[in-house]
Length: 336
Image 1 (spheres, helix red, strand yellow):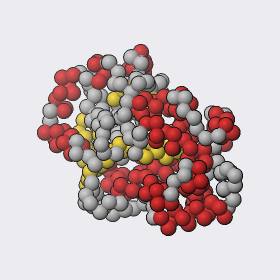
Image 2 (cartoon, helix red, strand yellow; image 1 turned 180 degrees about the vertical axis):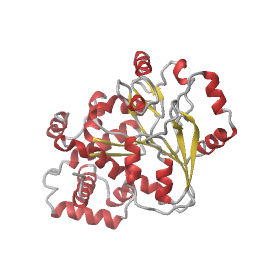
Image 3 (cartoon, rainbow, N blue to C red; image 1 turned 45 degrees about the vertical axis):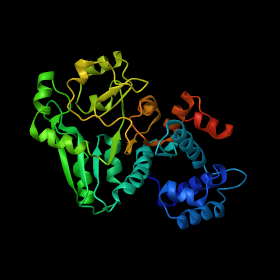
C-alpha cells in the first residue's frame, strides 16, 4: 500500500528531530533546508517528542534515512538529498514513496511565481513523480523534453513527461522532434540540424532546473525495455564498461561518458549539463541501481537526489562512508 499521510507526517517529524537532536541544526536552519516555515519545523519537532520518536536516540526508522541524506549531501556536495525508507515487505510501494517525496521536492521549484524553464529527462520513476504533483497552475513556466518523442520504429515514448507536466501546471511544453537513437551519424546530423530541433535545444540550454531519471545498463534495462536499443547494443555498452545512463547518454563507474562513438554519435537526446550551477535533480531508487546512481554522483552530472535507503546505503558503503550508529548500519545492510 502507498504511504499514508500520517506515515508521511511521522517521517517528516523524525527527519526534523534527527537534524535537530543529532545533527545539531537550529530550527531556522532546518526550516531553510527543508523549505518549510520555522513554525512548521517547530510543530513537527513537537510531534516527534509527543509520539516518542525521540528518546536517547531516534526510535523511528527514518533516522537512518536522515543520516544517509546528510552523509551523501556532504560527501558529494549536493544541493539536496532525500532518502525514503525501504521495507523489504513493501517493495511494490518503493516507487510510490520516491514519487511522493519527489513530488514534494519538485513542487518547491514549480511554486515559483517567477517564470522558469524546466528541462525533463524520461523514465518510469520521473513520470510517477509528476503523477503525484498537485495541480499547480503556473502558465508562466515552460517545460522542455531532453529526449526524443519516439523510438527508431516510430513508436511513441511511453514515459514522455513534458505533456504530463503541462497538464499539471497549465504551462507550455516543447517536445524534441527526433528519435532518441538513429542508425547513422549522417542521420543524426540531419535530425539535429533541423530548425525546430535547434529551437527546442536552445530552450533546454536555458533551463533553470533539470529533472532526470537514471537507468542502469544490463539486459532488460529501461533503454532496451522501451525499445530504444537492442540487446546487442546493450552488450556493446557493457563491453565499453557502461554502468548507467540518463536520456541515453551512458557513463562508466567514475561518471565519465564511455568511449563508444558508434553509440554516442548517433544519439539525438540532449545531454544534461555537467557541474551545473542550477539544480539538476535525479529520481532513482532500488538497490540494483546503486552503481548507476553513484556514477552520476561521482561524475557531477547531478547535484540533487531523491532515492531510497537501500540504494543510498549501498552507495555510502561502497565509498567507505560512516553512516549513523552501528545498529542502524547493520539494519540497513540487511536490506535486499
